[in-house]
Image: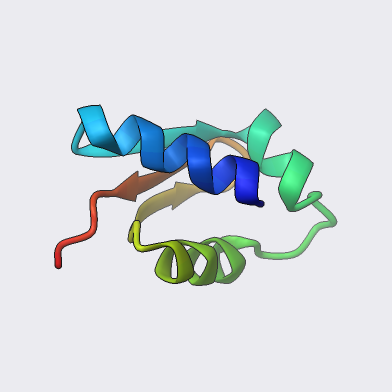
Length: 67
């Protein structure tokens, strides 16, 4: 998770949002037929990059922290 958080933070230094696609998401949160969006939202909140959008099986989009 630390590696993913670092990757998101690095991308957000240069852009307003960061899309992380399913192959990377599956490494941290294996898909087991359950909704993962709450886990992504909690991860985003803990790392200061709010979750803007999640499309099941495709990607999660994180924003720069509004604060």
